[in-house]
Length: 188
Ligand SMILES: [Zn+2]
Image (tube, rainbow, N blue to C red; front, top):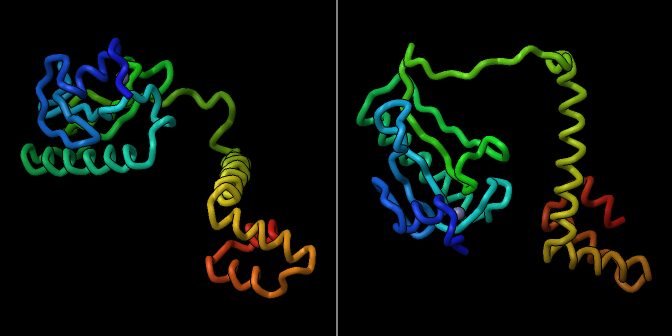
């Protein structure tokens, strides 16, 4: 869907003036009007997504493929010291439409990030932070798995097995589809 009042949608769909350097069915790449270095490109999905966390799988792949394409082009044309890919979300998204910045970098070009004071002692809590993330990711994986067609099928078979209507079949299916031990436990 395109939001008629969204500048990002207009830029991505040829409804606002922009220097388009590449486009395909899913994304448009335009020059940033205030380049941090020459060749600073913005990559926008043609559909309206306010946040990167909202985008569908095909669009996410198209954004990354375009990012790689532009990175390679900038590297070939400008021979920079590096290329930066950057995406600002939430309060830091100044377009309210997902866009990835890709721009060449040079030593001493003045661009950088400022590392804030580590007020919450994050550096010494990496183990705890990792565990926090891993637990959440595992939960997400399990939910996605259960909602997938094969997850649904295995759950149905497990239910039948628990009613002693199916014996070895469900175990064979689980092995066949390579369910993780964690996922396998769910079907026990
Ligand atoms: Zn938009």
